[in-house]
Length: 239
Image 1 (tube, rainbow, N blue to C red):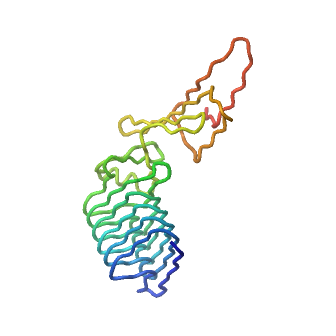
Image 2: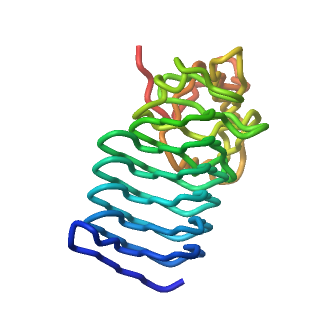
Image 3: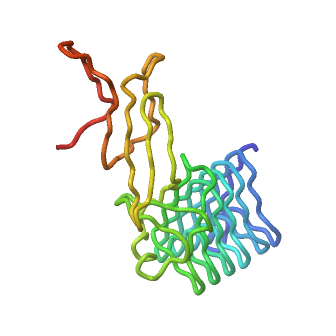
């Protein structure tokens, strides 16, 4: 917890620098460096919190591993946003990483995952590794065009996700009062449908926290013969 603001202004300076580990468990961290925003020889782990990092060279750099388990991370660097001489592992959280060369750079492997299906997302200006880039086992990510990514990514897929926001994608239903959002997959494409229960009781208020684009909408309601009815749809229709 708490608030940390750190800066290293000269060309060799780091906002936060240690020969050991850096671990963020919450609160707010702002780090700016003439060299790196955060540099840690023993590795960097972010479990939670709001982390904003800027470095003239690298935003975050370690000769060990970078692990993100949660939180909101915005990182940028003149060369790389995140650079690890070992692995970069994302298990959850919201990440935006940009760099003059690469958003996320790892000499071994990059593994992308999520823990919160509603809120987690990853955007990196590009990915570079001497090992592999993969989506964590049992997880799916969706880009803005409805393409799904899972398992080991090939070079074409790695290039395709550069600069794109990858949102967590979970197959199944999510309920927003009278509206059910049904997510399925057909091959490498995400299929999202909306089902509206026209017989829904309560106050009928629908609160959907973000814009959701769907392929089709099904409206279920019984209508009485020779009786006027009013239908109010909780979304816009593009025709």
